[in-house]
Length: 187
Image: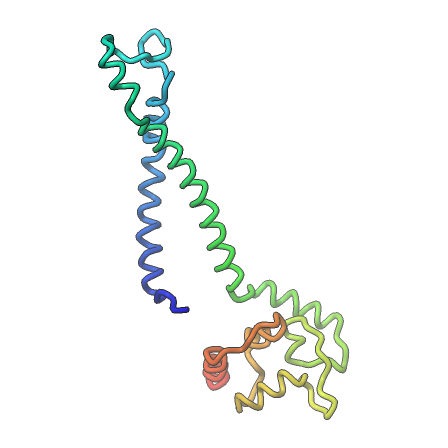
């Protein structure tokens, strides 16, 4: 499945955010006017239900037979605003789920791992709070970390975010490999 490029999504999101600010400013006025256009809303100075000011039969029929645009717009607006709230929360949840873990979360995992350190754990996995047994043939890494370190062909530790992919059971993509190589090269 082909997706819209990120820059187009960002442009649409910026335009939508600008439009949402405008809608938020104007919504109270529009909502009030839509409410006032509902049948039975007091329209006279005496507070009595508005019957309209048309006194002839044809005029009354013309005003009562028209589709109630205000009711339809109010219903549509209510439904769309509810749907918008759900969509925004869903998008936020997906974006938040794919953000790298915070430094506070990493520190907590490292502290927990240090407190529960076992000598047979993978040194790299311990940095993200995971207890993985070291390879049987020696070394201080588990099979996954050792294989990837060898495949990346770099000295030093694997990036923390890369090890987190393994800890979370996620698939390593070519983009992940390229990013890890670039980071390990900088060290």
